[in-house]
Structure formats: structure tokens, C-alpha cells
Amino acid sequence: MMSSDRLETLTKQAEELIQASEYKLAISVFQQSLQIDPDNVEVLRQYGKALTKIGEFEQAIKIFEKALVIAPGNVKILSDYITVLNKLGKTTQLIDTFHKLLIEIEPKNYITINSYANVLASIGQHDKAFQFFERSLQIEPNDPITLNSYANALASDGQYDKAFQFFERSLQIKPNDPITLNSYANALASDSQYDKAFQFFEKLLQIEPNNPKTLNSYANALASDGQYDKA
Image (cartoon, rainbow, N blue to C red; front, side):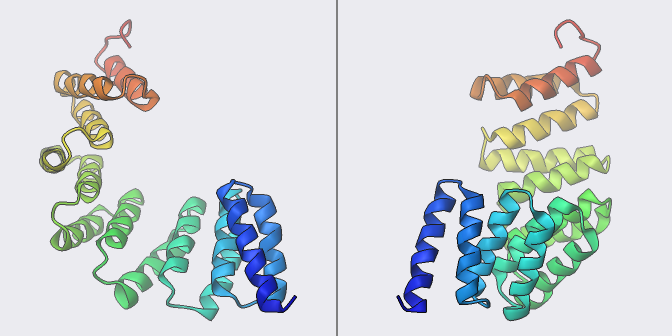
């Protein structure tokens, strides 16, 4: 069998294994593929993603970095690389990679901008995060994910009134979105607005009665309000 035919066969086999969540077997197939074509960018990317799935983060980073040497502007590889850097908490590399994406490659991709803003908020750089959330909303003003993320960042910075405005905007677009409702309820509880928070938790439980995250958040809020028996 010619090497190109063999590579195609292995690629299909790896895809089937990935679909079946057989990541370790898929990794073995990717390794065989790379013996045929060591610089195949897509094989390297999929190999890195499979390694990420089984928690082999350091090895995944090496594979993604090899792929980025071959294709430094590949957005898919950069995005996958960001995912694993985030899992490992490699903040400096994470920010550098986002910077490359935002400045050099996709300066108007609001999803990337939103992800970067979330990272900045998570490490306490709230003012800078808010700038990027605003930039994201200038491109896509009605994206509920951005609105919710911005609201969460504002709440974590203690800017509750402004946060509530963004939660409300998000709910105008998706009134029954469980993620936004839960975030809003938690922010209200953090601001000691318990009665209103409980209303949102009750609404959430009507939508998803057995959601453990909602039940846990509701219980925590009840306990914070001193309603221990109900909690």
C-alpha cells in the first residue's frame, strides 16, 4: 500500500476511534500516521486533542507547539493550544497566545475576545477584562454568552448594579437560559438580595428540576441567609 493510502486509512481509523471515545487507541494510530508524515499539521492537531482528552496535557502542549512551528497562523491549533494552556494554568503563555490570535490573526473574532476577557478576569485583571468584553460587544452586541461572562466578571469585582444590567440584557435574548439564570441568582445572593435570588433559583428548578449545580447553589444561598433547615 502506498504511504498516502496508508495515511488515509489510518486517519479514518483514528476518526472512528475518537467518535467512540477510544482516545488511547486513537493516539496509537496517530503515532503510526506521524511515522509516515511527521509534519502533517492536522494529524498533529488531532493527536494533541486526543492527548488533552486523557489528561496528558504536557505532552499535548509539545505536540501543539510542534504543529505551530509548521503552521504558526493556524487558528484551530492555536485554539486547541489555548485550551490545554488554560487547563494547566500557564497564564503567561496563555496571554501571549491570545495576543497572537487577537492582534495578528483574528482581531474581530468576538468569541476569541470573550475567551481572552474571561482569562483576564480569572486572574484579577478586571479593568483590562472589561475593555475586551466591551470590544466583543461592539462586534456582537447581543451575544448572551458575552453578556453573561461580562456580568459575572463585574459581579466578581463587586460591581453588582452594573452586573445585573448585563444579566437582564442576556435574559431578554434568552429568557430561560439556565447558565445565565444561575449566574444571576448567585450574584444576587452575593449581594445579599436573597429573596430575589431565591425566585431565580425556583425558576431554574422549574426548567431543570434535578440540576445538581442549581440545587447546590440554592442550598448555599439559603445557608447564607440563615435558612439552614431548608438548605
